[in-house]
Image (tube, rainbow, N blue to C red; front, side, top):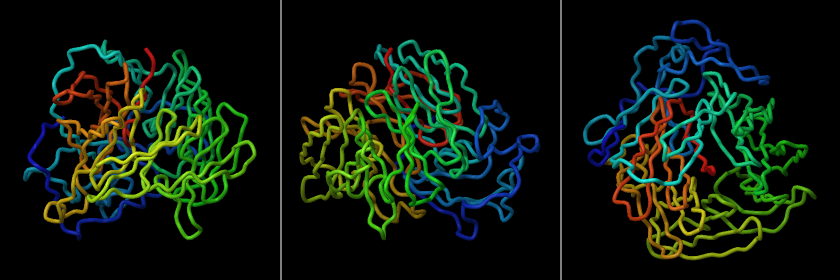
Length: 453
């Protein structure tokens, strides 16, 4: 974990040394000894143990806040899978005149590391969370103990990318390095881990229905604008959504989704919010227009337009269970987006990643965008705080959840070969570090879920 540096500066190397990240070899990747590593079958029939490739490190590949960051590969695409990849030159992110620290990560990528200054945690929090990686780990932040889910064995090419609460268990979405491959959904209880869904389609995301049930959203391929198929877990419901409708949240038999016009691509964060009845298969009323949104603890929250420097930014709230709506204006930075935001249990705090103010191309030659903070909006007072002691590279989003008595914000950050948990609460001068790390590779942002003690 790197310490806080000088303000960041971004530098890119010559364009002649860069190539697209898409494509790949026709054959199978190799492990650290040059032996072929079988690809996962198109239809997963079970979970296997194969961790030989966990520590493979090849070319850089990072995600930039919802878009693929162009990486460099050699002219031979197969080099990204060999045991000793050829040296490549790639876009470089730098800070204080030095390269931003990095670490080898999943799927032959390299992650830019979060920059952290934190004090040791010396008090009890009452917090217990689950975090996904190449297993599901239940962590008690008071005892500093970590326990992997029983019976859960994933291959070196499988990763838990989402966790949602269900009835007496958690549901984990398992995906692979290739976004178009099939996915698996696991039911993780205190005593066992079982396969809840194995599909020959790609499972894009999971949705809890607020009553202990879970739905899986299947798509035929990525990218696609075709109809989405919702599969109820443990079943037996299956609903084919109208074309152009993207699910955002589910409560009972009511789905809230975003619609896109015929000439527009489907979006998961902006568009027209509508209701849809999963029982009658009918569209309901229009709820509003969203420019960015998030859903947590049974509440849908959205901004109807980008924030400006000349007026309040209106935050809308919609209770999924009752349909009650409210709206209030807040003074927020122009770069505010609610994507990835989480709500405290008492509904008074909203935490979300917040990009720093863009200062122009003189500090952003590579087009990465500005670094990220974690911000906390106090919904009663309108106070906006940023979590001191944490700077995230523009290519990484954190995992966020409120835990314990509700006033502890748990921040999970991806460190390439592992994930670390950090804590914050109102009034804390900086981050607190419980010194808990999960020694797993993460495919993307670490999924983190608060669970009862």
